[in-house]
Figure 1 (cartoon, rainbow, N blue to C red):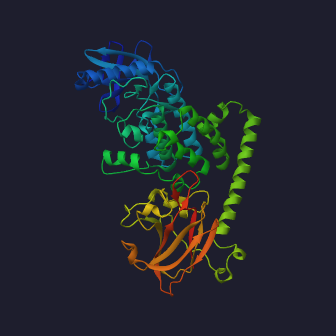
Figure 2: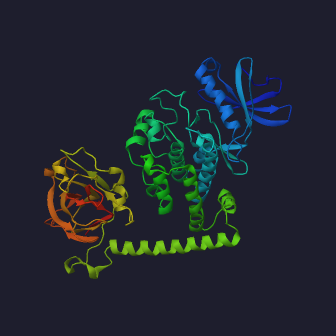
Length: 492
């Protein structure tokens, strides 16, 4: 129906359309009784005839009407006019978080954390009333004229103690942000919103969602099976502390994820002062959030920021020392014959996992960048196997380095958090062989310390690809055998 210029219930004058979705259209309207701007969501005519959809729509009104929180868009009224159900919301002047990201790209780190805190606080208020949003995404977050974030569109929210409106195996939510359990049609809890908020935070920091695909199903499958890309690969200035929060929030297994939104928000609040200090100070919503934190008066905040600055300085010093060690400037600890070796420059995508037949073709490829990111605190670890000899399934696994052009490499330096595993080194000139037999053996050894340099015998023949091939694993204290590489450097 055409509603622009008409009145709902003789009170709300429809002025303009704000947006439309699968179930409803949202309009800007004027409340002639209270003389104020409002937003009205009107259910589509064909949807209003469907009893489950109508009940879902009515439930949204009841759900959000229970919430009174500065970071949740307020419900003012609800009703039906000539068979058309509607909900009246406060009118939030501003833009959606998605529009902000599209316009600005990567948001300032502290601002992104501040928005995540505000979104999390609004969702926590819903969770306290046993309500899970189920569709947390930037499109459902409004940024008002004062810069505050407000969560909206609880249209598919569901009581945590009820599932009568969702059939078994039915996925509800937007797949760019959907949790693994929700993508599989399993029961959801507030932890599903935690996962989605973690994805939203990742997008605010990087300007893009972590997974893409040809269709919604392929994206959902990546949420189920693929590891999250490291946010620091795209945004190096993000601290390891914040990256670890995102990693925990987006853990595939809910048992490894934050147990509650409150826990996630608490950690975000703790890291905000640190990120503000690293960036040289807070602005906008970051400043507002810092001033609201319990016990963060001026002197307390100053102490916290000073501590954060000290922490940054220490971390920078440790990183510098690690870089010196990795790049060959600790010559006295290396064998004399290798003392003049230097690291060959590699790009951030120049390492790839290698698991040829009879392997399945993949060996934790999502974590391979950790082996060349310059951060010894991160690592690529193989899958866990029943025994150190790969359970007699195959002869080994590994990763190869792409030098970009044929070169003569003289050595490989490996930093590892595990010792006692064995390795062989292979080279290939122009292309990556599909099977191990296509490589040329150029060295071998065993990791018996946390850092070791191995010489390569290439007979002065240049090669573009160099394979680090793990031939035996280290038994773990808690079961399973694996090997791990914190950093690997090709030397010439």
